[in-house]
Length: 75
Image (tube, rainbow, N blue to C red; front, side, top):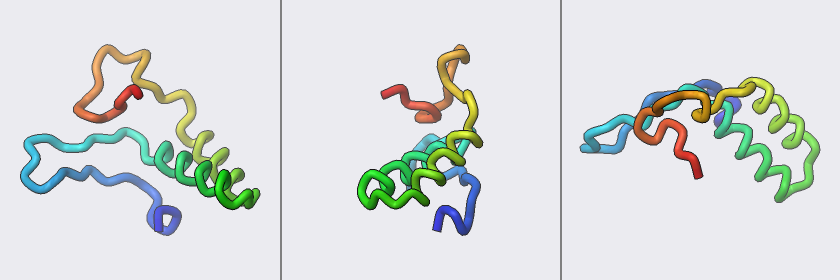
C-alpha cells in the first residue's frame, strides 16, 4: 500500500491538540523495507530500502535548532 501511494500525509489523532508533522515519508518506507528484508531475506526489499534511503538523503534534525512536535523524535 505504501508503494502504491507514495508520499506523506499530515495526520493527527482524534481530538489531539497537535499534528503529527513530517518532512519526509521515505524514512518510514526505508525502515519497513529493511525489516521486510531482515525477515524474508528477499533482495527486492534491500533494494527498496536503499532506494528510499537515497530519497531521504542527509535530512536530519541535528543541524536544525528546533523540530516540530514528533517531527523527528531522536530515539
